[in-house]
Length: 219
Image (cartoon, rainbow, N blue to C red):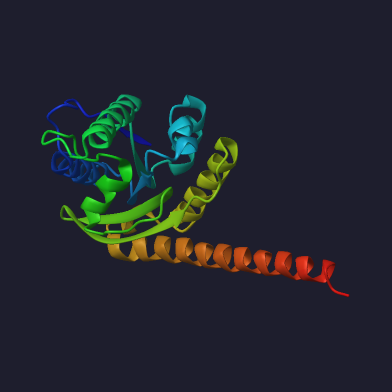
């Protein structure tokens, strides 16, 4: 787990954060501390994720699981709190006067930062984004959605997602760590296969519930 501590919340901007993330990715690959990378994606209205990331026990557990296979980025408390504070003040101004302040802060939520990093307009929130970096360029990515709303359940789900991701990397020999594209393809296949069956199971559960409901009213 790699906590992003933003030193200048007042004048900072997302571009500098993107540069920082890519710099850490390069460093961790060079030092054999990671084979791939992840970012915990969330909006400011995902309280279970915010609270989970403030708990040292949860963070230590996730850090132990990710080990030297995966570097997982997340934003620190002060950053999130300051963003919430700024967003709240900005919303009040817009509500009272019907205009947006010229100096209103940008949206620096984790979801917004990741969208900038990938140039994507839409990402599920909350979720874990997995990505690969080669020569300071993001070459591939995939993601797994966090569906649980309660803190403990969200932690269990997050833990399982990370375990699924690194299962494909744990058997890779050190001499093959440089094969970044091939390694990420293994991770991507594991995550997307898992997500497929989760979605299929959820749809099936919904059908079962609908069927049971209809049977109750059958004459």
